[in-house]
Image (cartoon, rainbow, N blue to C red; front, top):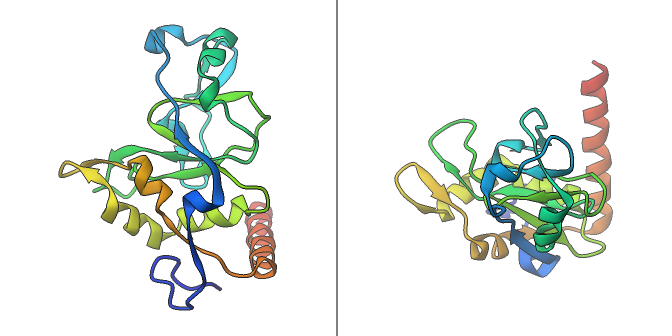
Amino acid sequence: MFGDPVHNPMEWPIKKLSDLSLQINSGNTPKGGEQVYVDKGITFFRSQNVWKDRLEMDDIAYIDEITHASMNRSSLKHGDILMTKTGRINTDNSSLGRAALYMGEDDAANVNGHVYFIRLRVGVNNKFILRILVSDEYRDYIRSVCVGGIDKRQLNKDHIENFPIICPPESMIEEYIMFVEQIGKLKLAG
């Protein structure tokens, strides 16, 4: 409907992701690392939990309230986009740049240092931005801008802030998201 979101053949206006965001940051590893994980508590997302358009909870970690409070800078809000920071690029399931929506409650989860969270401005459609970030074209773009070794790479905060995002009219975005959600419901029913 919008064409290639990277090469933008339809010539939509483009904004940097930082211009559409209130905050883009990564979390950090709590003091003590895995030793501070608890059986129940605040959900703590790591890169293995963030996949293309979904959060995997099988191997989720938890931190206590005190640890969470000490990491309040990376406390998640409903609707934040999570994106992995590091990973291998020469695999089909590359862990670099995978993105998913956090749809839990405000301040009930946190992220470690291998995961960025992107908090968008009011009125910016997080589902549309996610669709762009998980597209095949964007996967290739991410691989072209990341830094690091031959196989293991990293996205820096500057990379993410400078991601070019197409900005078609809001009415088209809403129509597109309704269509995508309808297809998702049909897949679940089928």
